[in-house]
Image 1 (cartoon, one colour):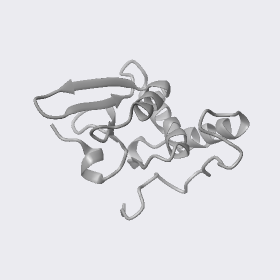
Image 2 (spheres, one colour):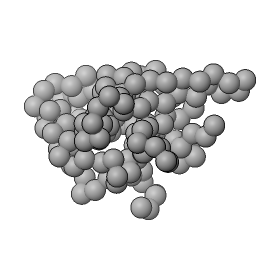
Image 3 (spheres, rainbow, N blue to C red):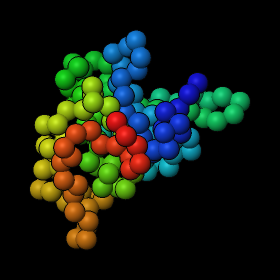
Amino acid sequence: MGNRADECGSDVEIYRRALSSTIHADTRTGAPEELLRLLDRAGLERHTVETAGPVYTWHEAPGHLTEDEQKRVVTSAVPVLLLARYIVNITDDVFAPAAYQDAVAEIRGHRHPHHNATTAAPAPPPGPVRPRGRTP
């Protein structure tokens, strides 16, 4: 069992699982509970597999949603994660620019748990969010 977040050196990797319609949000091994709760609150479903070694935890967009709704859910989580200072990567095929902009507007319009006077909400990116040092 692999973990894209560990492989890529990020906190969260959001992508469509190969040969599937499932959108995954992989978190690094040993991710803090705060990060996992943010994904839970964003509407993603948490899954955990315990092995003899590490415990693997990941989230998925709810399967009962349409493809567009799934994209909206995972994309809307990105600004919240960035505001909490997590490194997030989301692939082009699941990124919904309008959902990102709506989520940023929501953060700017309301006091968010991770928002304070010295932390501005992230501006909408020109494309998918990628950790520094990685190229598309």
